[in-house]
Length: 397
Ligand SMILES: Cc1cc2nc3c(=O)[nH]c(=O)nc-3n(C[C@H](O)[C@H](O)[C@H](O)COP(=O)(O)OP(=O)(O)OC[C@H]3O[C@@H](n4cnc5c(N)ncnc54)[C@H](O)[C@@H]3O)c2cc1C
Image (cartoon, rainbow, N blue to C red; front, side, top):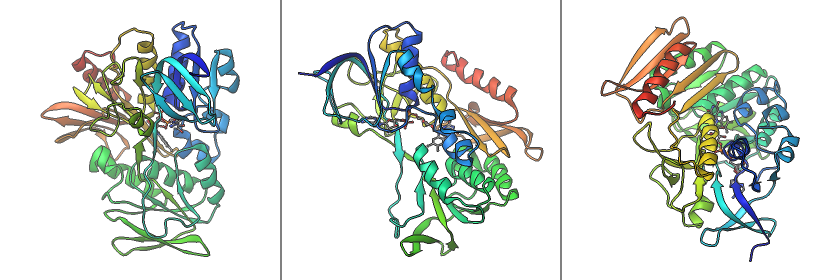
């Protein structure tokens, strides 16, 4: 017997769940809604954690999805510092870390992702940071005193953004990555080469084509990063930008079907293998009408838009999630990129504009057809690509 009942239970205190709550109310839903989130903060945007919040330009409240009073105004019950520990999908009951049992009619699972932890020698030393939450950004900033030396491990957007932000704070930054050039895996060497030049011009030292072997330290604190290729990099702190892993633990234990891309398998309407239970955000692997197959994407805009689609389908509207995925990344105020796609893979690239002038678009093609597009300052090209991808799926884009 549950302690109480809610009409809609939103599990996970991130952007996807928050935007779902918002859209339930925007669409006129008057039933009870409870959002359960593990973190101490109310739902917030993670992108500032490696950008303006890390440099101290934005406050904590600037990052919040909505001001604190909004939740009460919307009659959405917000439970922070609370985890859903068990989910019985037959009886539709959730067991919370507060020992309360809550029954529900419909639910959204939006448990996001966790950082990918690398187990190497010296991993327990102080001064080694991972970055997912506001609290991690606080710890990095406290360590990032001007004149210190940071090694950032990774070559993708979190690593490059952190390198830029810490450089702005006066920290001497060195990047160590497996890729030959930054962003190579997501955007290829042509666009990646541009962002690598921007970083180097601002003083970031980059070691590509090499992996992390381990850490060495003195008095329990990291003082050196050792690479597989034999580099020894002196440092005062380390930030790991080595990716994320979808958090499917609760879903798995509840018996939900998982997909081939590491997420929880959902229909195009974001419904899981159990009717009335939906997913959104980083852990949602959905049948994408845009890609013509299962897709899972860890982007802010995708979590945001899937939160809305999930809300509409919780209300029985029967809409497919046919929004073209969009991504952005900023290297301090040195360079910004926008991207629509993403591609499963591409076999050729078409560059529009000029890499030398720092205003260009890359169109990624597979079998001669557009698969994705990246833009630096060429929004018209990005928009044209978005429309082309949306039209192919018959989606709204
Ligand atoms: C530092 C950083 C910078 C980023 N920058 C960009 C960017 O520039 N552009 C971009 O497109 N994307 C960016 N992203 C990615 C983007 O922020 C994510 O895709 C987005 O936050 C995913 O939202 P989500 O709601 O799916 O998951 P999350 O934001 O991970 O939220 C899930 C929440 O659920 C909670 N939770 C998990 N399990 C339970 C449980 N059992 N009970 C209760 N709560 C639970 C978690 O603690 C977490 O708070 C960035 C991410 C990070 C970490």
